[in-house]
Image (cartoon, rainbow, N blue to C red; front, side):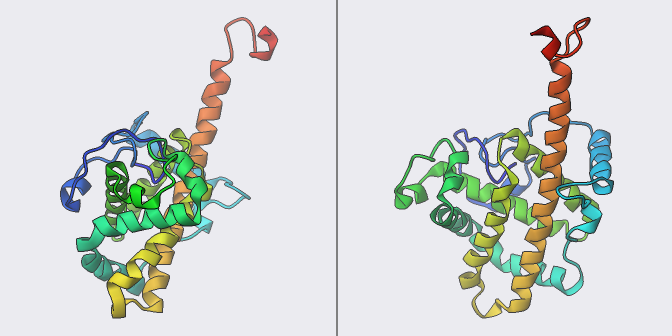
Length: 241
C-alpha cells in the first residue's frame, strides 16, 4: 500500500478487520498486491544493506529512530483499542486536513487532485477507501510493535512502493502530524502528553524506515535503468548516440 499514490476505483469497506486481513497494495491503487513483488530473501538483503550503509547524510537505520517500547508501546496499543471504532472517520479527517494544510499533496492523487471543494472531497468514495487503507496500515503497525522485524519489513516495503508510485518522502511525516491532531478529540481526557509523544515516536520510526525503503528502491531502479541503457557491443547508451 502507499500513503500517497495513483488511484483506481476502490470498493469502500466499512470495517477495518476484513480490510486489514488483506495483503496491502498501493493505498490508492485499489490493488491488493504491490508492484514488482520480490522474494523475501532479496528484501532482507536490501534492508540489511541499507541499515549498514549511508542514507541521506550518512546515517544508517540503526542510528535513526527506534520503534516505541515499554510504556510507550502499551500506551499506543491501549489507545488504538479505543480508536478502532472510529477509524473511518479518522481516515477522512486526516486527509481533509492534510489537503487543507498541504494542498500540494493532492498532486499525488489523480482522481481528485482537481477537486477544490473539500466538502465534495469528504464524499469521495476513493478518499474514504484510501483513508481506511491507511488506517489499516497503522493497525498493522500497532500489532507489530511486539515484532520489530515484521514492523520494519512492513514500513520498509511501504517505502519501496512509494517510490514506485512517485510519492516522495517529504510528504510522509505530514500524515503522522494530522493523525495525532485527528485522534485527540476522540480520546478526550485519555489524551496525555505522554501518549502524544508515544504516537509521535511511532510515526517518526515509520517515516524514517519508509524513507530507507524509498531510497533503496530508487538506487536499485537507477541501477536497472543504467543496465537497460547498455547494448551488447556498444558500451554505454551515450556511446550509441
